[in-house]
Image (cartoon, rainbow, N blue to C red; front, side):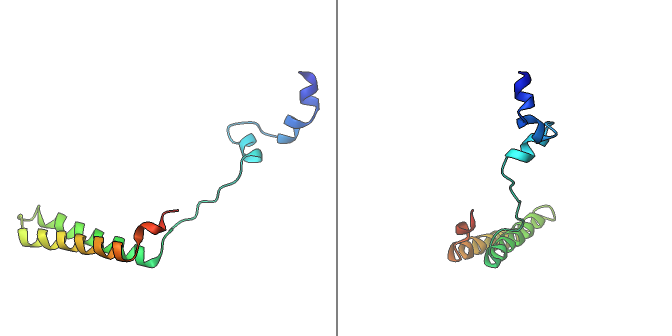
Length: 91
């Protein structure tokens, strides 16, 4: 056992704490923020706007025509998403 520590394998690794050894031998992964194309972001925005309109319509009345307008906007956003191939952005 004394020979292993003298070999330098652990001595070169430095800190072997929670992240010390992993930081030396594990590959580094860089998190890239904001994946996706602008068309996908626009599609997502359309769907969110539809949900917000429909969500606001229920507690203020309910105002059914406003709710169905929001639902229609969500469906429109889904159709736009299918047209721009939004699921191809998954990577």
